[in-house]
Image (cartoon, rainbow, N blue to C red; front, side, top):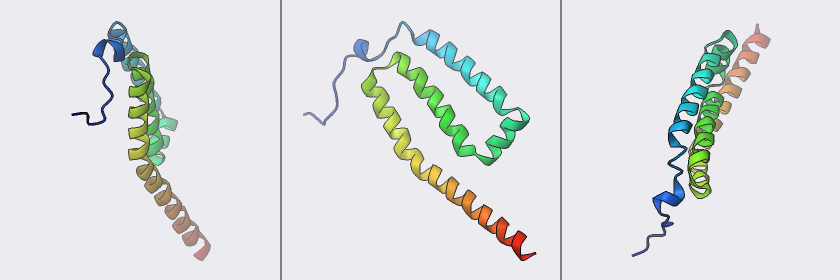
Length: 110
């Protein structure tokens, strides 16, 4: 019974030779990103644009996976993150806009 899954042998879909190196590079890039987010500007940005820092972090992971996984898997993973992330990003931007409107109203009413 075919449930619509794409059948790919493990050896064709995962570059196991690069996996350990990719993991080390991913760790180092993520460490650098964490250090950047811990600077004064990074903390402010993370506090005010949390959604963007998450998107960048997810992008780092997807980029690393692109080195070891076949393009079809990357497309599926990217698509899943895009579908799941869109409502969250919309919510964050909507709330930010509402907060700005409320702040403007307070400033103009005073």
